Length: 176
Length: 100
Image (cartoon, rainbow over all chains, first blue to last red; front, side, top):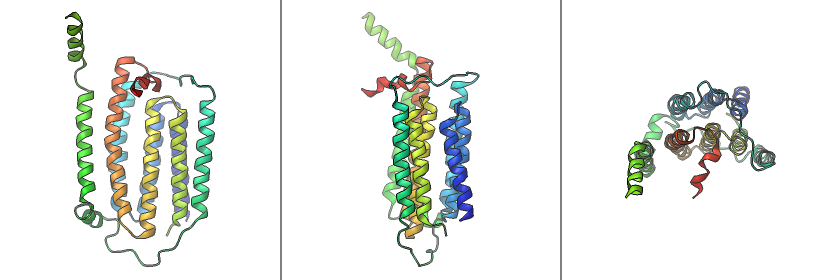
């Protein structure tokens, strides 16, 4: 229980740091803390492969991508938060979200659920177990994920195509 | 063993904090990071239930979440960078033209 409490405090502190950070860089660093705490928590929940994948994919690839974009877009700028157009939207949304989250947390903590007595099956949570599922009965999910990642890569290529060509074509069409 | 209900409560708290971030911040990058946090909270709940029921299917779902988050971050950051190159401001209202 003590390791879980420490990890929970670190994760919640990281989460609060993300939404309270003045600059995106601080938010990104707090998010790294949150993700690492969750990765250790995955280890405690005997999901070894996912803990490693979390560190490699999230803390490694995704956060580095975030930091690249943050440094590209906000380097040397002190941008304050723009004012809200809808008056009171922030307070309403915040209070509603706190209410929903508190209700969910209280409900979850109040219902322990049945205990599963039997010991863990062999290969639970490691590469053998998850590999058998992903290349066996859950192969469809793996293929769907592969197609989605390919589509995302194509989408990024389309988004980052040279803007000038379409611009020129647009102007030519206007002139014609 | 950690009681599963406390882990799910922690997931709910992190999910709510992420939702607050998405709804109250105006910087698209911070909103995006909050959305990442919500993904992570969902994966945590899946893994907790997988541990509770001794079934690896929850971990497969968490694996799917990690992959989906990678794809989503790529597309989202590309959109943010594209919009920033056109408008030179980091404000979520610049993307309001996407609402169709």
